[in-house]
Length: 602
Image (cartoon, rainbow, N blue to C red; front, side, top):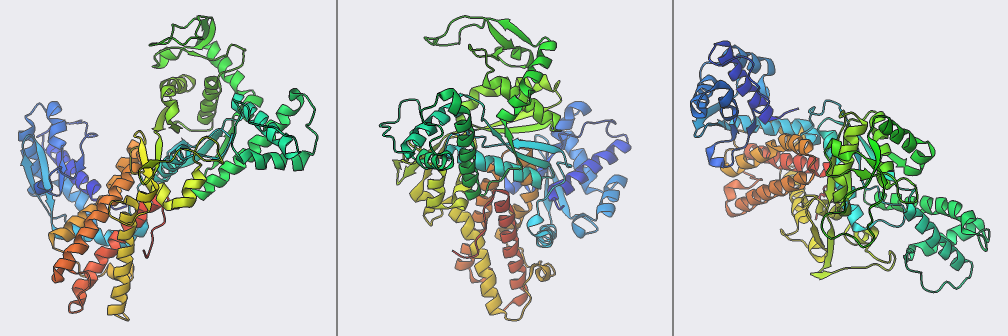
């Protein structure tokens, strides 16, 4: 793993250690908050540390005065800990790390690295290939990421697609950061909605056998996708379920419908390149007695009681009435109110099943849980986090990522309905129109908790205003440069292994060094995005890399001496080709995380 920010932070920590050993700082300082990051203003330097700012309180010293002492320790003759670090790690493959340090008010320490250091970063990228950015931060900790979990009642819509991409990219990001990730789908196959599905399918089954059904009744699913499923049921069972009571056919038809819908959903996920390691069934939990067992355990701990809830805040619904309910003491674990566990008919609520499901995850060895939910589940977060704290005695942590709505447009006009689905545009229709890679990238150009506008015309146009085109064009442009270089220097070895050995001291133009600095941020970006559970940062970063690369390419078009290929200077050409390959490698590494294939030509 190569991470210049880790390397320099190690030097800062070692310098503080030397000051402590000299008695200039008190022992036992908490260094967890000491960070090394790019400064907000690049004019201040390449890197900056907040060490003096976060330690000043414990040291009882003015931050600026402390910054000047740390600056002296970094710039003066290296103390034992700094010297040992440099010798042991041979940072960046060099015996010493070349830098200058400046303390600035109110107490930041800015660090400027020599060009040779950045050139060494480029070599590290070429050596690592797309593994550049891989981290051991997760230390193999198990993480369960549950995403999509769409009810098996029909084809997936675009909102499901956004959750699928966010969850899949987050899982890949965590894996790159060194976590052991399990990707999970929870099938809600035991609730009232699958009964409605069964009734809807039975109607289509009767239609397939020649019955005139008329308009689909209110409350059933009207989508045309059930016509085909009805035919499949008729082919399998013939007239077996005609003229029989609902109690006889509901169960078998429901099972058939759920299986067919999950097959449909799996096909949609495959079209999007989304995979799961496990499909967990709510019905399986019910039949195994897991819900009864879980809630009995909570009851024995005094966490379930019979009570009457206060009316909802704001406008009270017309059908609300104060009545005794079976309640979970959610407020004891951070929720706003206690939550019902049983419906008026005595059956368990969805919440009761979800408590048992999350307890099951914990019992399978997951203390780090991430759920990706749709926009309509925002009010469900606090109660579920409270339940996880309750059933795991606080040993597990649940983070919920809410994916807001996707608004579909075509040339600015809203796209509202699909005949196949009946009420929405299906995911398959969108992916068939724009392609998997465009869809996946565009689902990450906004934070998951922000609404996203998706215009068919804009996401397929070839312009710098289209983020996915802009990034893919950067990779394709890099590939094009390498092809032209092979033509200009026939017989030369231009492989990454050969370019690692190129003399890179010619890469001194400010635009070249700025681009290398941008590439060197990739490992840090992987770790910070994984820590925050924010895969959209990858898409943002790739757009920044693409912008810097296109800017450098345009600069070479205007200034002949800055072109990537100089027939009169093979040595400088090889150095610039190393930079071009570095760009392609980092873009490919980032696209791999978000599940997008880099293109060679456009």
